Length: 196
Image (cartoon, rainbow, N blue to C red; front, side, top):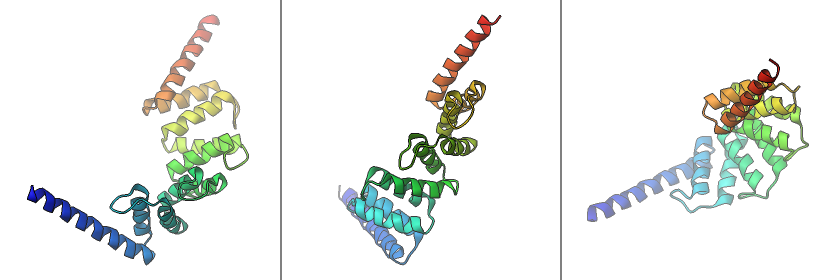
């Protein structure tokens, strides 16, 4: 029993030391420490949860080019967590990280353009970003790229391409794509039978 209490106290002490170390490093401009501190504030890990303080440190890291920080700052603006909800600013941060290859940001950027969230709806830009994410192996982007081909949004309608992208995403484990691929394959096979 005493051993358990001492272990818990030692853990809290160590965690507190790490939090203090990150705070000092963050205050000196260390971008990784700023990001770790932001995550700690966001999740309430070893420190009192505080969304506004989390956003403060995420913004510091994001402005210095930290890709995950740019993405999470976009999320904060998108949902109004710790800041006033501003989906235009959210898209700016998503796109900033997307331009540097951050896959989650690529997906959010494409979704914003597809849905007209924080911007004017633009299927061609959405298609562009879905294609980049799909080429990087992101199954969500592959599925949505298939959707664009199937619906003719941002690109000429092409059911063969839609099926190809849904199959890639399904092979990668995306259940939504698997269903779409199976349905599309069924329609394709029925069409072939009718034309025989």
